[in-house]
Each structure stands twice: as structure tokens, then as C-alpha cells.
Length: 455
Image 1 (cartoon, rainbow, N blue to C red):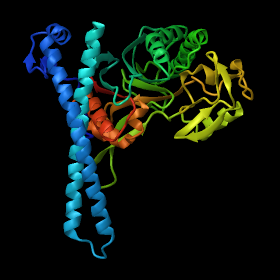
Image 2: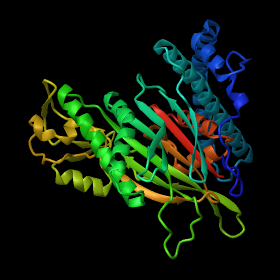
Image 3: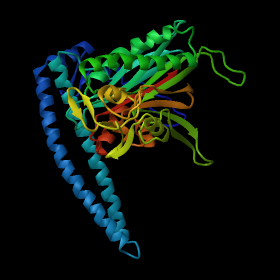
Image 4: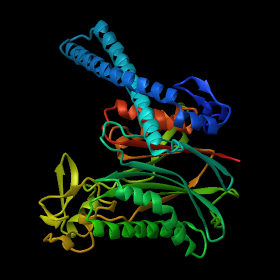
């Protein structure tokens, strides 16, 4: 997507590449015939089943091989540490072993990608639906946006991650605002599905009530929409007594319609980027920069959200002021201060690893369920934190939105470097998930990559 600071961005795959069924090695004249083949062909289904079975076996072989190589690396390290003078032969052997390990892990991620594709095709076939869209192109102002996404169930029993590629809302003046989101459900899928289904309508409703489009009015509309969406779900949660919840990271691209300030030099038709976060799904911007003198251009990872973890000092103060408990249990979590009666049973201890989320009724209204020592107002909240930046096509390359399954094992810098080496947004998202899976993430993992070019 960004081969260098001075390079341009690429869009989605070429139209001809989209018309090939890679597992069956067949090319189709139209997208509809390809989709019909994927949905109805027994040959296609059997090919995918054979590939999936083969890859499951290969994954087991790769795990054993990687374990053996890791042990050899440990032994080489011990040998080097026990020597007064470095043995160049052992040092060279260690370098080769580390390269072998990286190759094994890369193949491990590729094998899982085939498993995920087979699972997606099987579930789409059973549901009688086409495979979900993985890319989108849209124009906002003078920017052509291209988004690509990959979403893996990974090693979990259920898939609770979701994504949205096609948010479109209209400002009071009629300007198009394009949106993209990654969501991570927990304790069930009812809440995350509710947010996916209703967020766009809530955004449009709240924005339409504003007089005009501005950074302030859009930020306020996003805040109101998140709270409206959350309250709508909490009504259902109270009725059914469910504990479902979800995080969200949302990106909105919109034209800059306000006149520039006296000290600003904005180009006509320039765009702004708003990133809103509820929970620990994260947004990271890749920005080009000139490095230190003599080092040449470089790509920087600029975080546009701050994870809502219970151990974050400001979040912990808010939680404890309401009577909640922040404690370490595998990871830092927010807990209700005592037992609660919920869903016809007594829950002795209930906690969550994020301090902001949609849903999570018990953590928002513990006092309604006989939990003593908690003040009204909720131990967690669905209020988003919002950041707005100018999009500068000359320096800003792409945006990565991903669930915590990615960020738990991949740094911002690693994510940017992985995506920047790919030729389009779909491949960038896929490669990021391969690397994430190879880094031993057992969570659902989703990555959405958004790039742009100036028209």
C-alpha cells in the first residue's frame, strides 16, 4: 500500500483477479458466475473440504517443527552465554534457526488462512448467502477511498468479531460521509450484531439534528449515536437478562467544509478523519515522514485511539469512584463489588477486561440486581473517545482498524510495516492476520485497512 514515503497508494485487486476461483483454478467471465460457482458447485465444496483437511494436518506438523526449532534456538543461546568468546559458528547457526522459525510461522499463518476461507464458504453455503464483501471503494470530497478487510474466527469456538465496510451518512448540507468499523463482541453476539445493524441509522438520526457539518457537530453526533445505540440494546438486555457486550472502533471520512483558520493552509476539497473508540479495538494511522538526517524517508505508526483498559489511571479512578473493583485476573479487569442476582441465579463475581463497551448490562446497572456498594451510573460506559485529524494524502498513507486479538500480539509499528509491504488493502489485512495468528493469538482477529488517493 505504501512502498515508500514518496510512493502512491494502491486500491483493491484488479477486476480480472477477482474473477478467479483460486482453489479450483478456474476463471469466470463475470462476478455473478463466480459467486454462483462458489455458492452452488459441489466440486468447489469438495475442493475446499480437501484443502481444509490438508491444512489442518499441515498446521499440526508446523507446530511440532516450530517447537523443535525454538528448542534449538534456546540451546544455541545457552551455548553462547556460557562462552567467554563468541563462537561464530554457533552464532551463525542461531541466525539460520531464527530464519527457519520465521518461515515456519509464516506458513502456519497461510495454512490458517485456507482454513478460514473454507469455514467462511461453508457457513455462507449453509446460510444460502453470498460470501461477505471484503472490499469497498467510495469517493469523499477529492479522495478516492479503498477499504479491505479480513476477519478470522481463529482458534475460538465462535466468531464474535464483526466489521462494517459500508457506512454512509449525509450531512445536513448533503455531503457524503463514509464510515468503516471493527467490532469485538463478548459474552455472546446479540450486542455486537445490534450495533452493526443500528449504528448507521443512529448516526444519521443524530447528525440530521445538527445545523451543519463541522468537527464539533460530527463529534457530538457520534457521541449521541453511541449512547443511543447502547440504550436501545440495554432495553433488550433488560428484557432478556443477557450479559452480551461489544467494543467498537469507528472511522469516518468527511469533506472539510468549514473555512480554514487564518494560520491554516487547507486545500479545497480536503478531507478530515474522525476515529471514535469504545473499548480496546484500535485505530492506527500510517504517516510518511523524513527520518533523522541521512536516514531517508520512513513510515510512522500514529495511534488514533487509546485502549480503554481498567488499569488505565483515569479509567480506574472513574470505576472505583462508582464502587467498582479493578483487579488482575489473567489481565486487568473491572469487577462488580459483590454478588448480584441476575438471570435467575446468583453471580458471585463478574468482570470485564475493558472499561468501556456497548451492552454489559450487569456492569452498567449492578445496583438493579441486588449488588451492594455500587453507585448508579455504571462501572463501564459506552461514551466514545474521539480524535479528529486532517487527512494529508501527501504524507498520510493508510489507516488500520483492528480488534484486540491483533493488538494483543502485534505492535502498532509491526502492523504498519506489515500492511505497507502489500499491494492492496485486502492483501494488507490478510497478511496482518497471518502474522497475528503466527504470533499465537487465540482470539477472534479482524483487521480493516483503509487507503486513499487524491483525485
